[in-house]
Image (cartoon, rainbow, N blue to C red; front, side, top):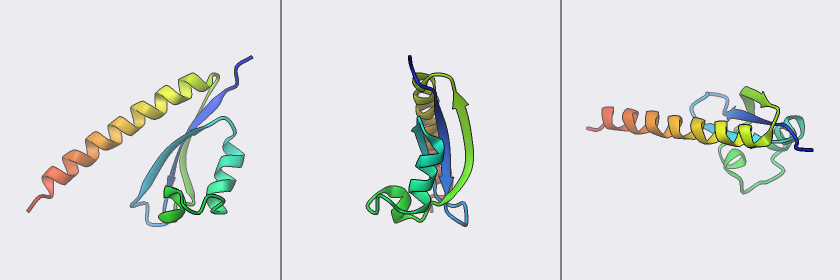
Length: 87
């Protein structure tokens, strides 16, 4: 039997830095982020402790696909923003 999963977005207090992740156990994963269990991780380095969005799926493969789509959209938006703000 395949397990479900979730895509989630973490942010810092100012919501200026975002992280998109995927997990099969959202409650545990968020706890790990909030308690800096992995001190060298991106979320620990930038203090991303706020869960700002999550979306659940019946299959982990669906969650992984959504994570990839979300990351591509963020990268595309970031490139446009950086082009707009070039001196």
